[in-house]
Length: 565
Ligand SMILES: Cc1ncc(C[n+]2csc(CCOP(=O)(O)OP(=O)(O)O)c2C)c(N)n1
Ligand SMILES: [Mg+2]
Image (cartoon, rainbow, N blue to C red; front, side, top):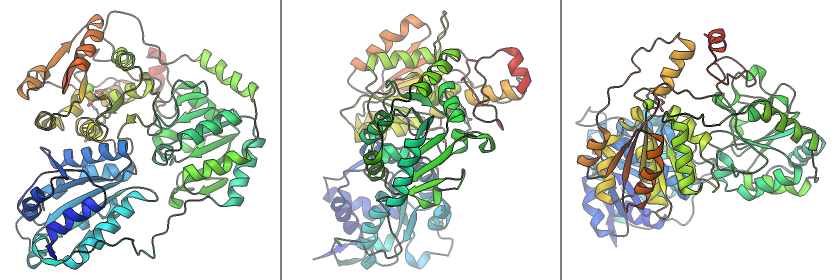
């Protein structure tokens, strides 16, 4: 029986196990939307901006480990997806973006709402397609999901001209892909695995740096086994948070520009770094010239292009993290490494961090701690970008694997609300908190309407400091306190929420924090808390730009600040 391109798209999505599509319609996707009612198994969530669709699909993908799907019309709909696609690319998130395109006869004519979206997205996409014949559509969708979800995950875009959506052909969904140039190496090379294990066995001061690859590969147990067997302490990158239990005695915290003293000093003092599914991002390494000066580096990654890109590796192992860690674990000797671990404890003692200062002021760190307490470290926390992100990274004790969702590589303000929305749709049984900046929240605030229309019960905590806080912090520390255009006039977020039919509470004092969080959690639906936090609170420690990991500022002591100004 013949089917239209639009029907073939829907049938193929069902074949791929897709349950949810985030999108907004327009002229060039009308045939697809007109077909949707024939497929009630496909839930469509109508967002209010295509950036929201892409971020929501991204949040959904991160919690489910399945490709998130977003859909937009041609031209402005497609370009509005671009930030979300770039974000998924930078953070290796499986995403399938479907865009309508003008009819084939109009392509290249500057037709109404025509853009070359395959051209625009080329550098920020794992792969993309312009489907020029309905006969290619099913195979294209099969390939797109395969490429998005296997190997190093990432975004794939499928651009479908309107007349291809209307054209008919026989529908046969292929049961396998035929991509001769696309090879995924999953098992690490045996000799490299042996070398890696030998270096670990011989080392005295080893450190694991766990990245998002551990989460993508769901290798939590294997990482834990490795750490415990070899008594190797574990630092994580920002995106590696929740790959290893935060309350584990071997956990050092996050490393990097805002890393904990213990994590950064461990890396600088190590004789061996085991880098697991991380890409030596500059926010993680600080100045690479001074990075881990005494360490040999074993780098495990599924993407060979990552090996040696930023930091040279002594022993590269290309493969899937789960399979490589399992292989290494078999070769590991049981060690106690007491001298090294007590050295780390000593450093931790000399450089205490992450204490919430006493006092009356409403500190953002205190708010995060209270959310952590109220949820027993068991919620999924989705952050914005900036100070709120760093406080959420540091002050919540993530006890469950893959419970910290944050946009690290691209760092787009505005991820928080749609990202949390997608995470809640993907994990409806979890409590999902959106930790928002007052600046970032306003970049995608319109998705409050989607929460209400779809009854998506995200709990929102705005850390309202009245500033583009992270940038203000840089102005304070590195531009002699010249606050140029970082102060924000903000609307009344409680009234805004009420306008969207979302109950909301403003919190000004410490003693109001816990009851407000309880009220938000008791409510069956989305709820917003507007925390009026100390405006000029800073994120510490911070490694000033250009410095190496060991040179962090720990406190706002004026002398130290001047030295770096
Ligand atoms: C889309 C986008 N524009 C600009 C920036 C640069 N930037 C990084 S953090 C930040 C401040 C964020 O302010 P807010 O959302 O209030 O978070 P806070 O740092 O105050 O917690 C800015 C402007 C960015 N990351 N993303
Ligand atoms: Mg702010």
